[in-house]
Length: 313
Image (cartoon, rainbow, N blue to C red; front, side, top):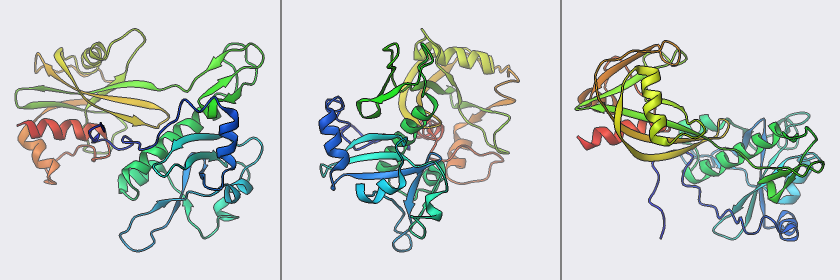
């Protein structure tokens, strides 16, 4: 049975990750050399994107056969297996960040390396490919930042198609990390609590959020962050959905919760302002009306938390 669609950008990855095949070096070598396999090059963590074939048709990820992408690589290039698509093709992501930008050389005139966040905000590629690109970006970024064993400091090597690094000196194994973040919408009756961080664009308010700490449950993290940032005690924490967030590799865990009081005490560090907003005002803002404030766009899980709560009323 297929999963229900996730409302969040960077979710709904359609690939079979074939974890049972990653330890088979011969199978992996065969897929990397298979003319039917496809690669997407990343430059400075940006995927290569083809322009629209016709106006309003959307852009496409530049999936390249092995013979086309190999000249862009060098022996130190990080290449990870993304998975197998519905046509049975193996898909890979490879880092080509060395020397001159290939879009000014071998790839000139074909397309350009584009920021993934910008592509998501503009809706220029499909949700499935956005999810695949988020996977590739997170994986390459992890390898680029974890080239040395954290146990002994010796250079480590990639294993299992990119999903593990092994230290040849002490034998320690290292795995790609995902950092869990609780993001929550606290409500009380027909009011919802939103806050502003100092870095936010003018007028934007969003759900509160924070990293889940070791030994802490999701519910405990929601309650702690609400109390630390806004001085609001909450209960009845309810899961809504999750969003992979490749900056660099977080998992946003969206929740709703109920506030026990309307009194707010802003911490002045994470937040510089927090306010209660009515369901009617939030409904109007989601519909595009000017109420003197705005909320994150649909590509953010905060938007989906607000939207689903408004719809309940």
